[in-house]
Length: 607
Image (cartoon, rainbow, N blue to C red; front, side, top):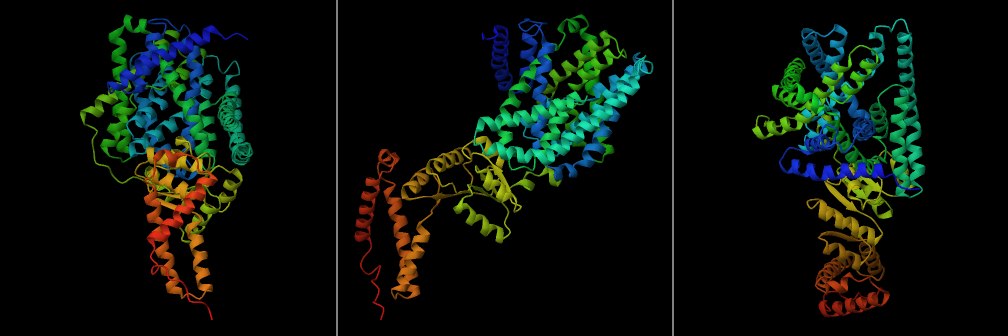
């Protein structure tokens, strides 16, 4: 089957535009989002016209928002979501009501009908979820107080959009005559039922499903399963008349407590990044530059008015919610623009006959321009220093340390299990990362935090908390895997405290060469303990036996360090049986030369 040349051409245009514009904007300190928006304007029908159908691209790129909300859901456990309920429902509703009413009153004052003014107020009162989260992520503010409040507002906005979409048929002129009210009630009931099915099915079926997929030990199948869950939940909500993003978010929350969360998150991240970039480019493509050129002053004044009204309404909502002025200032700068769900609301209102096409075109242009200007305004505000302030104690769900593992045990076979059992007896919390789904399921049944996945993947280590843990214990038994993981940890987490298991001297030398100072050879201590018991059986007194074992242990560590001076090329070669025998002979010779006869005294025969 021949490849679709048109699709290949469009993909190439998007990639070239992104590579050409986004790095330049990022280098100028304007952020990636503005780069994607400008790239979209350049290739859109209003400028170069390289991609003729931006609406189709915009519809497809909504999947980027779906993946974004799914990953956000993965980061929000139900316990954390419960802690955020006041911020979501109280602060979120306060912001949306104040901003929407203020904008609606201005629209009514400018001559809009009351119904149209209310829809315009609500549509412009929304903010762009992917844009705000992207700006917070670029500034490292996702875990800050203002970052959590911003997310709470955005989450409430996404939920509030659903009932308004269902109510728009009531507002049409002929809604009462054509059965629009009954249809709206039916849609609401269908949406509630679909949401209940998703929650019930996800709660009881998702973990067993991923457990069976993980047993296949195929990364491709695991990725396919993750994509199937995300898109399936999104399409279920869309068929029920709800938001695709809401379905993905609920699926993510249901998997947030799962041991498979880091692996799923690591697999989905690349798709989210690419499709979000495509979404912002599609928004830029839909901007009607000819309308802006026809009435530049009017359009720019409306955009400026939107920013000003939402800024002051956010300040007002912040003070009514009894939060500091600086929090409101930051939120006002972050969320003064319009949101992508405004496109959906205005199009629905146009189809219902509540708004005319000219008004909808103007509103879509205002939203597009506000989204394009938001990264620039944010960058200028950050550079001005107006937002600098001292950090204050945050709530539990604001603190990254609240979810920081004390110890991360990588590999939970027999060696790692001993470490975990001792920590459990001392009530020291630990997290386990292991690639065996049966072992993962077993550990989880005892209440420990455990994640499934390949520890040699950087994205999975980060998702499991390797960069936040107080201590990493590398207990992987397979030598090559252990070396790969240790090298990755030393390279990407240079400040991490790492203790590593070594199978033998050769393995220990490789780990030491990587800079791992805490290397424990798995058979050394047990062998020395056996030797001590041998000496006791031969009649050696206990204190002499212990002194003898400690002397030999120190001598062995010295010998091991001295062998590190050998040729790097020779040490990097796989250790053969003959090489191991030669090493053993050298060790016996070193013992004979270094340990004097008086150091290790021969025991007196047992009478």
